[in-house]
Length: 391
Ligand code: MLT
Image (cartoon, rainbow, N blue to C red; front, top):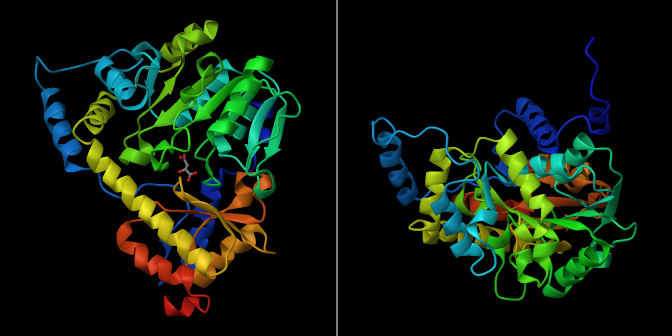
C-alpha cells in the first residue's frame, strides 16, 4: 500500500465548506420542498457586468485568427494588467514587477506556503480562514500559534510565542472586523523588530468605508520590508468562478523576491489569458459597475446586521466587511448551524469550523442575491418564525 503523507493526518476530516454542503444535502433529502437561502460560503451572486463579458467575446474570437492567437505568456501576468493593478490600488508605493498575477489568493497562499515552510512558529488568527492553517500543516513541520481573536481583545492577536510568520486578514474573514491604522502599525513594528514576515490578505478591502482603516498594509511605513500582500478579483469583481488574483512581493524583501519569482514561474504557468483579459476590463471600463455590485452586498450586510441587532442578537463585524459574526448564546456553533437550517431554513457557517476560537459563533455572509434580501430579513428578524411557514 502506498504510504500517506503523515502531514495529511493533521487535518480535520473534511474542508469546512464541504462539511456544510454535506449537511445541507442531507437536510434537503429529508425536506425536498424546503426553500433555503445561502448565507454560508462567501460566494458572489450578482452577474458580471456586460462590459466585461462583451470585451471578452471579441478577444476570445481573435484567438482563432493567425494574428490573434496566443500561447504561453509571461507567468507573472501581462504587463497592462499589472500596471492597472498598481494604478488602481497601489499608486506610488509598488511597481508592476512586484505584482504576481495568479489564479486567486487561495492558490497564492498555497504557493507561498511551499516557500515559507522554514519560518516557525507561525501565527494564525483564531478563528481563521482555514487555508492559512491547513496549508501550513500540509507544507511544513512548523509549530503553530493559534492567537485567539475575540470581542475581549478587540479581535486583535497577541504575539506571545515570538512568531516568525504571521497570517493577518483585514477586513477579516470570518469575523468581519477590520484593523485600525494603530493596530496594523503595531503589527508592522513587531515584524520589523523580530525579523518576522506578515502575509497580509486584503481580499475584502473593497468593503472598507471611509478613511479610518488601511486598505493595504503598504499604507503603513516600513511594511514593504516585512510584508507580502495577497488579493483577489473574486469578491469585488465576481470572479469566484473565473479565478484571478495577485500577490505583491516587494523587491525590498530581497532574497524572498527572487525566490518567489523562481517558484512562481516553476510551478505555475500564469493565469488564464481569458481571466486576465476580464481583469483588465474590470480595472478600466468595468470598475464602476463592479463597485455597484459591492454596494449591493454592502446593503445586504447592513440590512442583516440591523435586523439581527433589532432582534437583540450580539453581532460583530459587517460594517467594513461582507460578513457578520454572531454569538450563539449557549448553543455550540454546529447546534446554531442546525437551528438556522431547520428553524429558519438559512445556511450559515459554524464559527468553530474556522478554529476553536470561533466556537460559540456563527458567520453570516452578505453575498446573497439582493432580490432575496427581504425574504432573508423576514426569516432573520422574525423571532416567532417557524420553518413550517416556508416548507
Ligand atoms: C469563505 O466563505 O470563507 C470564502 O468564500 C472562501 C474563499 O474565499 O475561499
